[in-house]
Length: 482
Image (tube, rainbow, N blue to C red; front, side, top):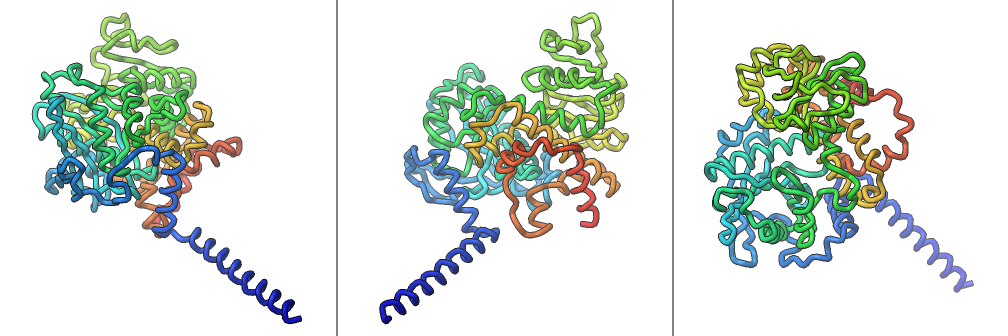
């Protein structure tokens, strides 16, 4: 009997402990705590195999003041508030982030290049920076620094708008010391130097393709460090196509229907070409233009590039429902803005206006403008899937990912347009109001699941999506009284 009582008491005690443990785990799982965020990050790192790479300072979270193994300081240079706010993107950011930009520089003497990382704010392993790797020849280091900051702030808008789990950042390589030629840069050595810097940053920065860098360059970089997001884990996925389908979703939201609508696509490269083809397939009347006329030869579209029978020199005067810029930054000058014939501007181009004044002129004229932080986010959405749900990313069919980007951007654009209309403001002013990340903390003080982790659930239930854009409209109405 004594033994039986002891056994019974023991089972009761262990049962209570078990129930306590289960309750503790449920509480931890329900709280937006540092514990869960760190555990999620560590799980992601383990799944992605990041422990395969040696790192002399692994475990250090903040890196601003830590010297690297060569004795050089990893020191971030914070910009003056006036300089940080001078970027055209700054007004799209919350007030607290409009003057928090910073730059990290590393001179690579054997290559003659200056490597810079621009960040919209402090980056950490909890919210790492993410942005492409750009190589260009700049007039002076200050010009390179300004571009790094402007691009990083643009990435911050995208990441915050869609809650990708990343912060806005960009790698810029100033090749002016390499005989002032991008072609003279030793890419293999540059990727090694970049890998070393990313290792020192200890998981606080991830990068991918951008101007003058290719997937082959990212393959080289990924051999020496794990901080690369360029669809390497699923080679059938093309980030440019993901961006194109996001733009398509934004255009669809603005026009509501493609049938009978006219669209002008400016720039028919890897993104614009896909946008034009999909617009034709969706029933829109499409005009295309490119500096290389042959690129604008899209079946079913009218090529108005220079040298073609349908050439239109002053394309901006054409009466179209939407102008879709997918080419160079600064396309729209004040002179062009005063003569625009389009009803809306929705595209993939970063910084389509030459100045803040030009953008204000366009929006004041009644033309609907969807900022690229909303419309051109397909690639960062893909990065979020690859980073936070690697298994789903590896197993995904490309079209599923592209349609996910289209669906998400369509909803967000609908939310943007309705928010602007309800508050009687222009869309650029409404952009920071629809941020998933900042909006989440204001609404319920609970960090939301990164969008990359929602892809698998969307793909499993995509057949139940009846009314595209309805979710965005509902969120705008909910925010109305905020």
